[in-house]
Image 1 (tube, chains in turn yellow, blue):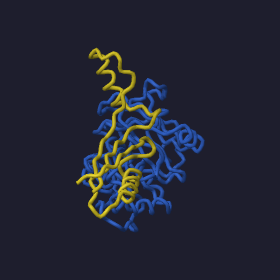
Image 2 (image 1 turned 180 degrees about the horizontal axis):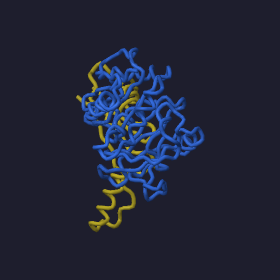
Image 3 (image 1 turned 180 degrees about the vertical axis):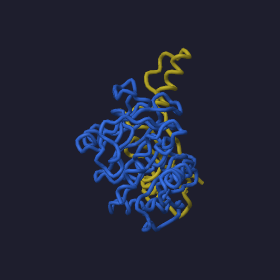
Image 4 (image 1 turned 120 degrees about the vertical axis):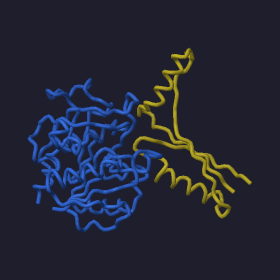
Length: 84
Length: 228
């Protein structure tokens, strides 16, 4: 069976106020070496056993494009893993 | 004239909007459950504020797939007036009826306060009861009201007179310090290409009676009423 691990983040150039706030908080705590911080949403999708790798991949893309990310402001990356 | 106010699970300004249309303006108004698939009866549709589907995933992202939205897209493409207020605006953006997106306020705080807006285009079915550049007082109540669009879209919005409202102060000054949430170009509301779809973050239905300290929002509903 295939599992998709998906991460949705903001596109470069779009200010993510949440990531900026976390970054500032860390720097204020004394972690001075943090130059960039990206925040995002994580999704883990377990497909049923009828899907092969190609099907799982195209379904993952479809779901990401259509629902899990908003292409105006976000990008996504994913990883497919075979599980028992 | 029959208004339809769409009710999603989690809408919470539906009753306020209904009240203003029915009791303050004496208009015909009906609730439309989000599973409805016929909008033939209605002369204008309003997507009210609230937290549809708990705002899970992204604001407006789940409501967009409600059965009624397919009909609303069709209705809007045929020229029917559609007004999205606050969460309604967020849903219209997710649906693609309006361009851009709304992200978290730049101060990362839920803002619940009175703001001033300037009417940038008074020549539409939503704004013709106002004169251009009139300053309106209305409340905002949102966490994700920070309007984002890329430079091409922003240019088009300007060039095509599709900015409906811009944040300003009581004197009409629109400079950056007045912008409450970080919206690009201080945008508080925009139209679609044909100007029959309006999305706005401020709440006109909460500024429609004297007892609520402002009646400036009434003009939007009156503009729609006078259309017929």
